[in-house]
Image 1 (spheres, rainbow, N blue to C red):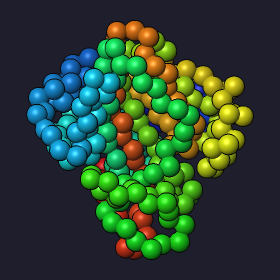
Image 2 (spheres, rainbow, N blue to C red; image 1 turned 30 degrees about the vertical axis):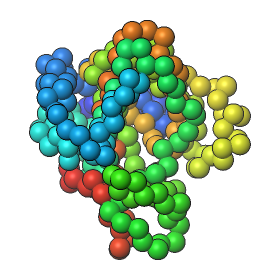
Image 3 (cartoon, one colour; image 1 turned 180 degrees about the vertical axis):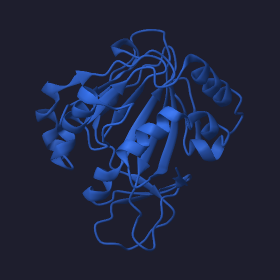
Amino acid sequence: METAVLSGPVAAQFADEGFAVLPDFYAPAEIAALLRAVESAAGSGPNFRRSQEVFAIRELLKEIPALWALLDTAALRQLLAGLFPEGCQLVKAIYFDKPAGSNWLVAWHQDLMINVDQRADLPGFGPWTSKAEGVSVQPPVAVLENVLTLRIHLDDCDATNGALKVVPGSHRHGVVPAAAIAGYTPQATVCAVPAGGAMLMKPLLLHASNRSTSARPRRVMHLEFASVDLPAGLAWRERRKV
């Protein structure tokens, strides 16, 4: 797992605790280019959600294809080569903006759903959801354990503007029943990330975020990567070979 980007104590932390912060993962000019690309998108439809509280774009690279050329840096490729020596694919991409004055929080949870191309009667897959943007399903734990999330921070993010809180090591406990989550949260820590930094995490890591108490935005690109292919009859809906 050790790479020029993820090495030494950081690699050990990621393996043990299920998350790691990588400062300066993107240069200021690269972040500015990413922001320009998002701000120039005049899209609408089921993948766009706009309100006073949040602006989100799901299936981000489908909606703004030009973003991939900006995201696909040498640092990203070095990181992914170390994490997935056999190669991988991008399987989900979302943009979140928690604007100044936003007052919503995200309760403790794990990221248990993946986006797929269709429903299929397969053992271990379920529950299923169908929304305007497509079909999602909770896969077997082995699939979730293969997925890695990279959150690219476009703004400085700390406890005052909705930084993630995580429970270190909770990814090693599989799917945590809702009734048991409160027993884990006293060990939570806040993950402050500077603009241009990235947070690497396991989807099974318990995480949450508080309401913002400052006027600063929190813009994030959430990318998920995996090396596994889904069983015959099912495919990743946003699959992009890396």
